[in-house]
Image (spheres, rainbow, N blue to C red):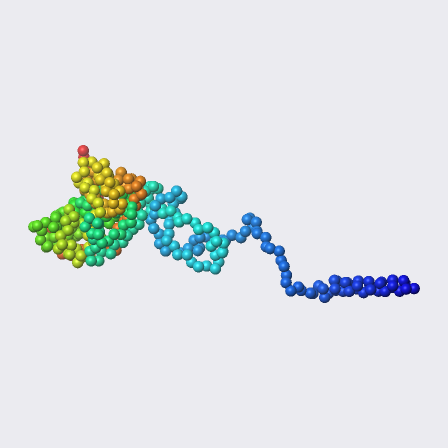
Length: 371
């Protein structure tokens, strides 16, 4: 009897347990219950083929503010820009996390056929107010050239044969220079001087007749006349105002003439190294003289003469040596042109009797009709 009661009691307890388990496991209450915390598996990295890509190009994110001429590179030519990057919420964050790209190599100026040209490394604009002086031979205040930088300058032109040859050598290397023509020569060969300006070179002046402005017999008025008449002759030849750049013949800087040039806001050029090309026996001597001095000094304004035949012959080799030596050309240009004096402009035309500047080519004026 007791055994039967025990079995019945055990069965009742088992039934209660089964009902309780069913209630907590399968009832709607169990389905609606929300745990206090939820653990989720880590997100898997997307395969490369499925990664999202921005449809914006770098140009969409960059505002081009200026372009500069540049050195050649091994990649296809492209325009190098100084840029300001816009802030944009649409730019993917991955773009900022990617490794920084190297700076784009500088490219040759558009139109340069020589992919390995010497070119122009930078352009400097000169404010000539007060008549600043350049060239450590005489002026040591304005040291604007970095190591391995040079400025090419040429005096005494324009002259047939020689000046065009100098222009060709410069054009072949896509580089620029400053020219200081003699006034008389400008009136002799205005068409050559116009070629100098058309090629993008700066054109200043070197007096009217290459007179020594520091000579004992030179008066202040005579020095003024040499300066102003020289600039007026250059203006007449070019048909445009010259740059306010001046170089004294023989680098003879008289104090009165210096003061006058300062009052006219004309920059005065000396040099850092003189090629002495007018003394050279051949082109090789000019190249060796310039490179020996330059390798010793490391930089500088180079004085040459486009009037000299040996200089024209030496220039292609010299430019090649500059390039091989890692030197870079700096182009100097004036912030504003020179305003010549009307009295000298008018006096020059009057003294010449007949105009020497003509827009007509020689072949239109003189033709061979029988031979």
